[in-house]
Image (cartoon, rainbow, N blue to C red; front, side):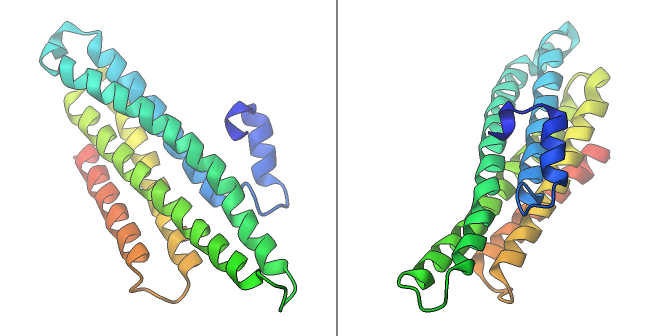
Length: 193
């Protein structure tokens, strides 16, 4: 499992001449890091009296960040396998019974996994923007960093959705991924303003 490895080992695996882990898993890990930064920013907001008006909301944001972090790690792991399964299905000999179905199912998963990651990343970007605006001012840089990481991961995942769909720009999944990336971009703009 990716989450159980040291950072150095994980980077070695990503750098290796293998198809996975690749961009999708890396994007998932970036969202998990963003959510961890958001947990920290919300935690420091809870600890300061001058942010008492935001304590209830900060508690909810901290919990949401923890959930996003766990979800992003799950999606990074799912991404690790989804593209590999598609490559394996495509390597099956033409005409082999069940090949077409396996390729179709694997292609659907190779689209579904980064699409779910887009949703997770967009939510993390929005959470970071809220913390940058309303959270502990001493952690604004961390919240902004989290927002930027999440926005970039969302755009990366949306790009993977489009690549895996292929030349079908009107596919509703591509449109959904694009809308999620736009939400993350809007969050980035709010965080930086």
